[in-house]
Image 1 (tube, rainbow, N blue to C red):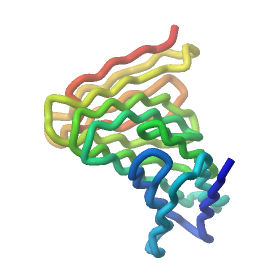
Image 2: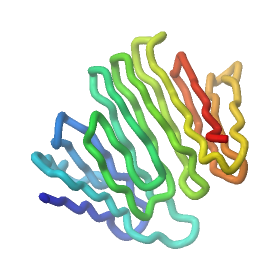
Image 3: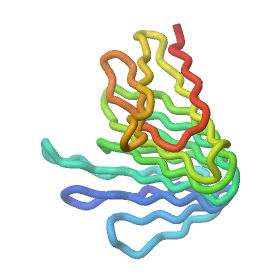
Image 4: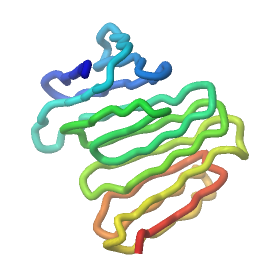
Length: 171
């Protein structure tokens, strides 16, 4: 199988992941020149170990079409293209236009921010708990519109721009 491993640099890193189609993506570490990969079955993003208090972040951008995304602390799958994620503290997912569906599995170690895209009225967020604890849903804040979900003992998943939210605690 064809494999690409993208490594972060010393210090805080932001890795941008832009899926472009089946087995094709654009990857960028910090302000480096983007790397376009095609026909790769395995793509691993390793931001590298950071000192205490550092922040390595992975940013995933959706497409202008309908996207189907599954997000876990150690992998993200966008339209059937899986990316393995290592040694990061935060994941941000920005869905683009289209009727998007995002399934998120909250984490105890990785912070997650997920944003639905345009048009409004069509983006769905599915929250899948581990079945080991209760899952709390926070309704949108009246000023900033941010809402969230959190499994007991886990990191919060901040959400914005989803018109439908389904929560399955897995119990």
